[in-house]
Image 1 (tube, helix red, strand yellow):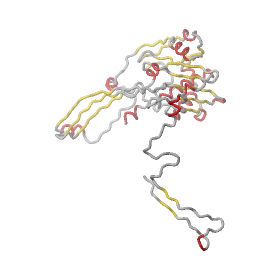
Image 2 (image 1 turned 90 degrees about the horizontal axis):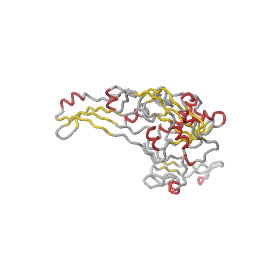
Image 3 (image 1 turned 180 degrees about the vertical axis):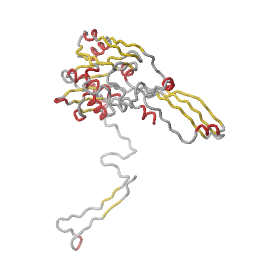
Image 4 (image 1 turned 60 degrees about the vertical axis):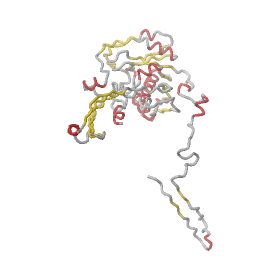
Length: 351
């Protein structure tokens, strides 16, 4: 829809010469143009600097890890599964708790609210419960005075896992009917009949690999408990509203009790749309248990293991076409490697 040009004349009113009566004033004719530039900025098509460009190149732009830490801030590091699939039998935290600077361990029983993340499908536990379903799944957190103390201690936690057979490729998952969402069939006409009637047919399969988002600023969250069970969450996120909802769900409080702030991200590209919510929840649960501000910043190796990726796909196709190369029929099976949970796989596959 486009605006249309228009104008109106103001009545002059009053006596001879068009003077306005007392209490009235003459109005200048007004015009509206769809091509008029917005006040205070250049029109479309004109180069405009990013609002933080000067701060970026000067090194003055503030990211979450640049925010001065509140007195008493502790640091968390994740305890990660080293097995792709298995039954979680228990864990030994004695060695970790004995390390310098360690203040505590955070596990599923420390979650005051929902123990399953408030995702679309509600299929992701905050921390692994009873089983692990991918390498790098977060089982709990170690909290310490410094980030390096927390990371070193987290690697000392011994997990007792009975391995189970993993499903590692989309073709294997499709063959086993191991779906995170029900399969979707989109059909127009009769492709089988159209293929039989096609002059030429071509059948094959192909695979498209996944991709790490590789934002320069890694995943990070900083949770600060306030008065009367109010919370302030600094989160490097593309979806602050979702972070608010997830944190309030995990803490068992109303949404309005959680304020989420994100001044800027050092890259996201889809990798901080839902994934950032995990870190915010983990940090908030740890802060709730210890009643101290908690910062959780993943190192790059852990970031790669913990977070989801752009989906790998496997395709099987049969195509029919004529002498001119015009496509006359297509039958396509598309299988996405969604990992162990649905996350945003439905919308991604729809695109």
